[in-house]
Length: 184
Image 1 (cartoon, helix red, strand yellow):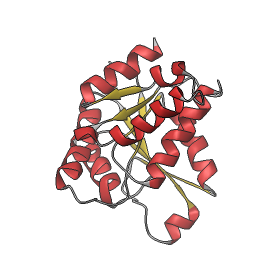
Image 2 (image 1 turned 90 degrees about the vertical axis):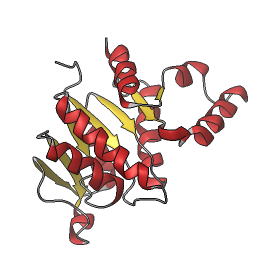
Image 3 (image 1 turned 180 degrees about the vertical axis):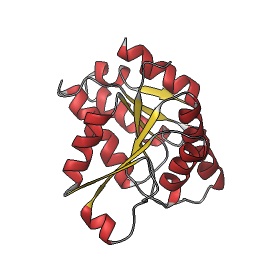
Image 4 (image 1 turned 60 degrees about the vertical axis):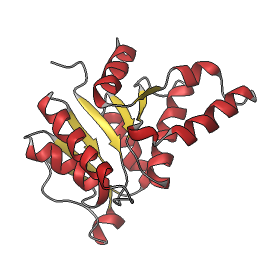
């Protein structure tokens, strides 16, 4: 049994241009379910979020979606999840996801994915959150962003300890191992 009961995963609400990322997202969800790790995510049914959640559902996993009311009204959410938690705002969404999860992982995504993972990372950096934070760096997707972060650290704006505490891994096995090592 994994020390991670639930993992919050931030992912794109679109497919992007590389079809292998959709397949990878599906595989992440399925593998989390096989390992008995519940998925907490943004409740979207499209894009990498949809593939991620479908993989977990198809493998019999727990899938908890957290979504603001406005997104439900726009019919962006899934209703076939283990649990669907509807909140008022994006701020409430992230706070509830943080409450439900033992760790956080970003897979490829856009502005929303980046904003969500950076916010929980900053909460961790400020000591407001104990859970570890990681990037699943599929095919080097996050390399440009991570280079920017290293540049910020070199310029003295991000402490090296904040960068070294991030888990960055090319595959799910290494990502989970890194996240677990930070929870022990």
